[in-house]
Amino acid sequence: MDAPSRGRVALALIVAALSVHRTASGADGPVDGAREYRTYCAVCHGVDGRGGGPMADRLTRPPTDLTLLARKNGGSFPETVVYQIVDGRRIVVFHGPREMPVWGDRFRAEGRGRDVDALVDALVGYIERIQLQ
Image 1: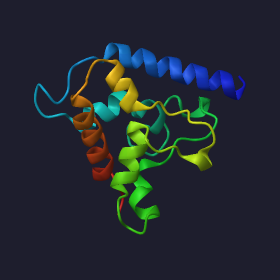
Image 2: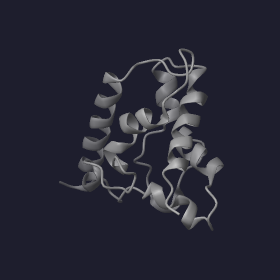
Image 3: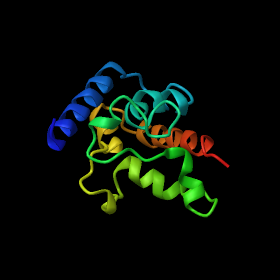
């Protein structure tokens, strides 16, 4: 399968997962970052965050090992950068074309409105908690 086809397959599976998971977050109580991570991120980044999700081999470039972000940033978790990547404000230029969905836009399209910030905060918080020392 060529790279564009792999990307389309990955995106289709992600969209399918999103259509199943439509519970409101934020307004109905605290957002569970681990649950949201498993729903939106694990398909590519793996349940453990190390990049070995079931769709990883179908992407043009391997997913980032999310457990090493702090280590690669001098021991400090790059919270603002991660938030901006997740919500779509920051494009990761050196990765080439963006295969990762712009989750902020996707959550808004699902009608989550005000809850988008709470959801992205929960995801980023969870990613921070899985950092390896």
